[in-house]
Image 1 (cartoon, rainbow, N blue to C red):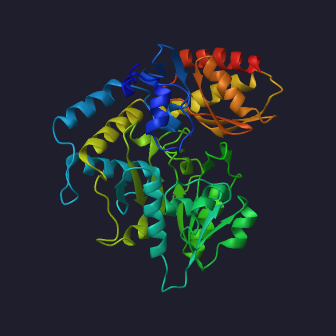
Image 2 (tube, rainbow, N blue to C red):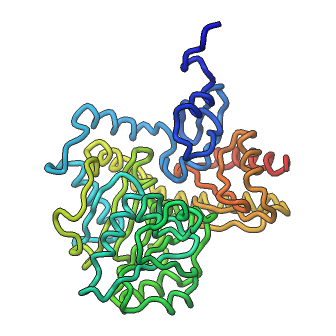
Image 3 (cartoon, rainbow, N blue to C red):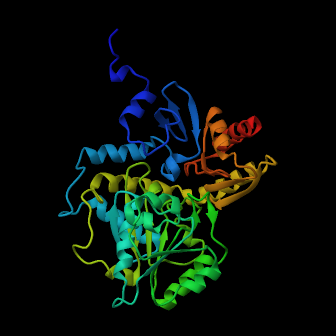
Amino acid sequence: MSTPRASELPWQTRFADSMMRTFSPPLAMLVRGEGCYVWDDTGTKYLDFLAGIAVNSLGHAHPEVVAAVTKQIGTISHVSNYFATPPQIELAERLKRLTGAGDAGRVYFCNSGAEANEAAFKLARLNVKGGHRSRIISLHDSFHGRTMGALALSGKPHMREAFEPVPGGVEHIDSTIKALEATIDNTVAALFLEPVKGEAGVIDLPDGYLKRARELCTEHGVLLVIDEIQTGIARTGAWFAYHHAQILPDAVTIAKGMGGGVPIGALVTFGWASDLFQRGQHGSTFAGNPLVTATANAVLGVIERDNLAANAARRGQQLREIILGFHSTLIEEVRGRGLLLGVGLAEPVALKLAAAALAHGLIVNAANETSIRIAPPLIVGDAELADFQERFGHALASL
């Protein structure tokens, strides 16, 4: 009997035999998508209410994104950073405007959220003021990425243990205003925080936290770095979550939803922070190439033109009401804002509930044992919400 060729084996076997064991076994083999839906290799249709973990802002195969990629790949897709390209400059100018960084703002492009936070980590190390600032502050249970600097910033010890020693100088504090006030002083170079802790289960910061953080950082000359990788790009009902608090950071890191599926990230600096990096202190081969920046321009252009931030706010409130409307004893609360929501469960059954949802054709995510994360595309409408209500209801009932 002849040995089957690799291409004839089940995809699960091929995946296990070929891919590094850094991820859990895949839940399905997805082969195409359209709008808020995806299909697997058996033809099963799923309502995608995770959007690639808040990446697919415009859903799947959006015609304007397809057109932008097609046009740019046929024009010029990559040049080195010895040269500029029109889409790169256009996107930088757009981000300065949307973030509120204004004329004094500056943009560094990279390829992911982790890379954006690595750049911000290096920026923080430059705010030393003659060597008197050696501390970088982050929050317990935060997540900023899996590269070494981003890992040091992340307040999840179990992620760091296998890779220690990670870069030093980072301290993690509780997410309370009291802890913030007790920590921020003239020895601190930077404060890193997420406005909503997505990987922790979509956990909101206390009311007034961002405003107090801004006050303390200004008072002590501390670089306030806000990680908007998951919350940014209209996801919470505003272009950036710090806009809800009516503050501006000194630096913001962006990725995920900006590219609508292509890998792109950015560090945007404000005011005095724009003068910290000097030539030759950071760089990346692929950063800001014309293919990804043209795509991001198309994504942001549609979000702005169609006012999808307002749609996220309105649909997020409807989604919250739908979830609470089940009156299930399993559902304790709904956290988050806009179209980034966390369903707090009364029992540690999030994995079972996410699996039940998938069995009923709904993609959501178990962020931890007691939290379901929901982050649909920003284009979601009445029909998709009604479909979610039916599928999630069946999943709840099955438990």
